[in-house]
Image (cartoon, rainbow, N blue to C red; front, side):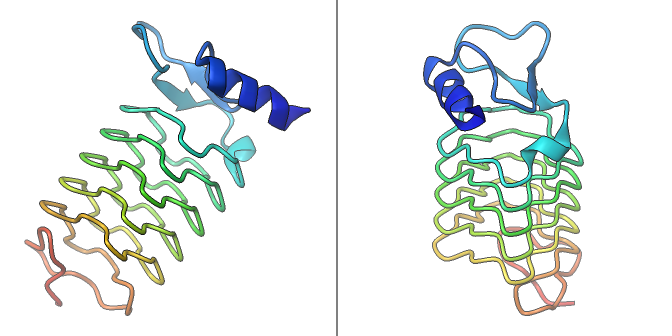
Length: 158
């Protein structure tokens, strides 16, 4: 029942998905949301959701399916995205400072100009990901090394 409710809401774009609340002053188009109950967002099935500019600070999105989503410009600081499917997701200009992306699927994700400082990318699949201009200082890379200060677009080992 809950899955059907979420699907109807997303298709109609009339209201945000469960666990999200409409931000005040939102304009026409897909709602810009912030998490109100992060416990309900782990393992969420939200492929293709459009939430540019969303405020998801400290969100628990562990194991969620956000493939093909538009989260451009979102704030995902310190979010737990462990084992989250972010395949072909637009994360351009997204703040992922300190985010936990352990074993996240970032295949063909758009991370250009994203802030990944101090993010944990251990075991993340970055095949074909666009990291142009991404801030990577202090990020823990897939092989366990950390990026040095000034790493932009490419991880310079410490």
